[in-house]
Length: 282
Image (cartoon, rainbow, N blue to C red; front, side):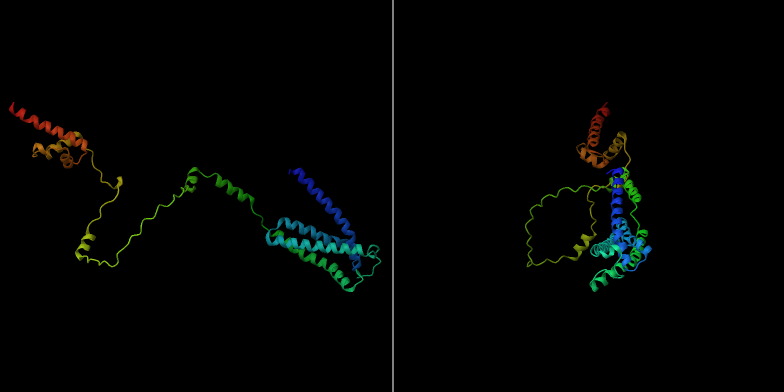
């Protein structure tokens, strides 16, 4: 609904409430006169009853929780009291012309005492309940919509890095469990062979091997050797080797190089040794 429609609806409500108050005002004024109020007090009496109803209605629109429940109860109580007094005004014609005796709202004494107590206690109740409702409305703290808006803007304007960190990784669908292995039967009757004391010490003293790939950061840096440097190292390392021992695997282990480079070194060294007797004979 737009603003114009809301304005018209509020104006219509005010008009209806005003006309209803005028109808109720006549009955409440006559009842106040019957219980001993003067002309001024009788004129103000309807504002005390129906006015508190309007105040309680406004309080229900502002308050929440227990305070709203309290305002609704006050509104219901004063609405019922106004209804009873209007009903009595319709049943007793003498109230219309002011010819009824003071303090006489019903012919039956218990009903008359109850109605007089109700009519005289409503102004005192208006003071108490009206003050309490106003205090509750003044001390009520509504939810700050501005802070909520700022929080929403902050959460929606986060950076991409924050979103990646806070986004949970989707959980893959769980696969059906595989068949459980057959239970292992342990022979509890079989005697346990004694373990020598030296074996335990030797087993604990044996260094544990490295499992898995060693990170690059943990490796000691090794200088990169050129082809000439590798050939020189291979010549000096295999100078006293017979020709049949010049294998790629032996050269690779001796100079600690790759298999491909070891094969090149093997062919080079064999070529040099096969050419050496020819040169010596010449």
